[in-house]
Image (cartoon, rainbow, N blue to C red; front, side, top):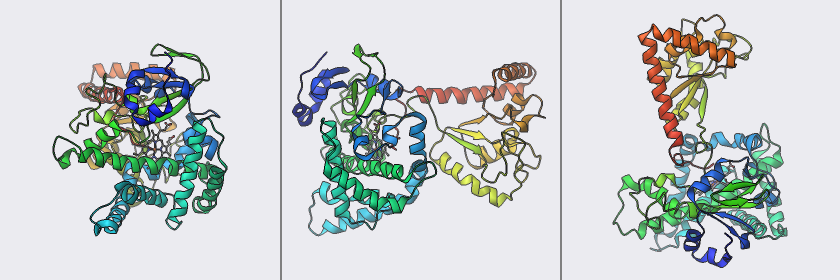
Length: 484
Ligand code: HEM
């Protein structure tokens, strides 16, 4: 299963080579395995314990230091969390839609009179660079100088990936980037300022060429599309299909932490495993007639251009703790907490939930605190139909699953038949803190269900919602997912 292919072959027209290697092959010129089958690629991306990014050989890490890109598990979360909030879909739309419109207009004004333009250099590249500069607070930095650092860092990372040492020019560029970014970004709650700079470099490194490539590939695909002009209703699918056909980041790197068999290949502990997103995206077993750009392709959104994260691994995001714990004066794990704030103050706490619901969050965990101004009966939120059904579902329009882990919390101490009460109040998914509590809660719930048509109806609805979530999570490849 070893394949003597050359880097030139992979660079010129990689697709026939990738097809010949599918699903996985040892490629001596890469000194590693190349995974080109979609199933096998998903398997590698979903198993971070066996296929890690946390390896001293990881090229980006060697040039810009440890960052979210080179860490797994809780260390990954520590690096990523401070950057996640402003990069969520709703936040990006709000902050960047006007910026992007202004930049696009200004760039087009720049070449409109000429009647012609080279799209990559005069449009896509500068647009991507300007938006990432704004994201990092570098609006005032010299654009030419910034692109110079960028080129030097990219060249150094590429060299390392080819087996060379990190370059002097790359190190100098990173130092200049550090000097400019550090005063703008400072340190974050759980990161040192050096770590903040490394993550900022990853965004710069990961955000410019990818977006530039994606824009020009899409324009090329649309302009050469033989099916005629594409209707606006199909634009979103056309973006997915373009990313499928030519993912802007063609490969991602992992390292095996143990001996493992994958699609018939015997991978050894320590082996380098490169996933070809370009190859996986043209796997004919999943995408029929894979070399064709088809704006109508039904599963185009299952492309892997952004790799696959938690959703594909079976984990859905949960917004918590509704309707907000920001005004709490104590910990709900330690006692019954009453939040006496006025309704107007509490409304502020709803804003992140509104954004999450707009962005399609599937689960909301309800708080155990009591909010007298929202529910005069003074029930903890997790047991309050007024809060769950009235506020969360009716007012905010949430249609997903409500979760509570408060059945053994101090706030529930005096509530008999806690599981039944939570279910009747509108909780769909009940999490118990201990196995004994879970057994007890389960049998109480079953006992109560026998005598209550209302509870039976609630359980049926909750079970249907949970089944729908499971189907969504296991849907092959998960839904399209954006990075970061
Ligand atoms: C079409 C555009 C883009 C494509 C195709 C793309 C592709 C990717 C891929 C494949 C990964 C996964 C790497 C891995 O698992 O090893 C990734 C991660 C990442 N990308 Fe992008 N990217 C794009 C745009 C951006 C932009 C605009 C930014 C910054 C604003 C960005 C920042 C990041 C970061 C910070 C990570 C690391 C995420 C993490 O480890 O949690 N990317 N990107």
